[in-house]
Amino acid sequence: MPRYSTLQLVKKAAGENYAVPAINIIDPLSMRAVMRAADNLRSPLIVQTSVKTVHLFGAKTLATAFEDALKDVTVPISLHLDHCPDRAVITEAIRAGWDSVLFDASDREFDTAVSETAEVVKEAHTANVEVETEIENIVGIEDGVGTDSAVHAYSIETLVGAATDCGVDLLAPALGTAHGVYHAQPVLLPQRAAEIISRTDIPIVLHGGTGLSNDEFQAFLDAGVGKINVSTALKHAYMKSALSYLHDVAAIDDKWEPVNLFAAQTAACEEVVKEFTTIFGSIGKA
Ligand SMILES: [Zn+2]
Image (cartoon, rainbow, N blue to C red; front, side):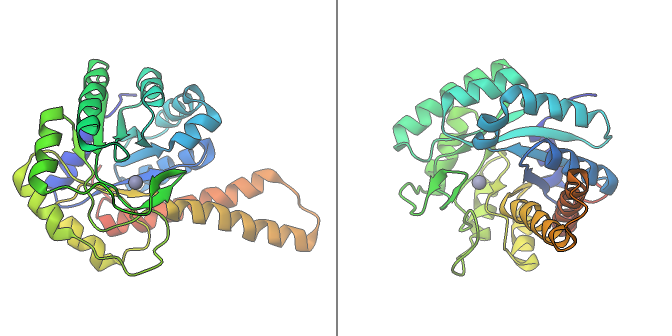
């Protein structure tokens, strides 16, 4: 099975006015579920792992699970490391065979963020791995990474200049979205996405994809965003399907069969893929 370039998947999507769902999986079960769902829907997909999952399962286990699952699908799917401020984990993912990594330098001051991003790009490109950059804070905490206040925010000129100088492949700017569940109405910035896109060939990534309305997503698709990250929605589906299944089994106190629990979680993960591929317009694009 060939490996796919995250950049090529995103470029094709942005050029054809849809976005590739980039879904944060939780474990090999949810990984296989989202990949099979994408295959059934003929949608390209980006499978994302958090640093937390890499620590939990080990890079080798996740990379092997991805390779195995890839053998059973015929749509293009790449493996991406989400929000990673830790250079050692970036190196681990590059060596283990990830297709792309997000070096999250939003906790660094500008000069350090830029110089370290340039170093990561050099390291990654030597191994044919692509780099998404984030030097502005996308607010919200995701798997222990992030902040609730935007301490690093830059002009479009500065942001695009830094991304270009570093030679990154994908750019995640602050676009008004937040990680996790929205507690207040966000002020979304699709016009900022459009303006960045008009100034650079580097594709733009939208984070914080859980909880926006279809119209809000459409505004970002119209602006030309080609990759949209979804994490919280899958977590909720994964946990709530388990809760519901276990609740039912507990009432009967009879069929304590883990495989049936996994089937319920798999089905819930598949539903999430169906929902977001429909909104992002990626069904039938593979
Ligand atoms: Zn994110």
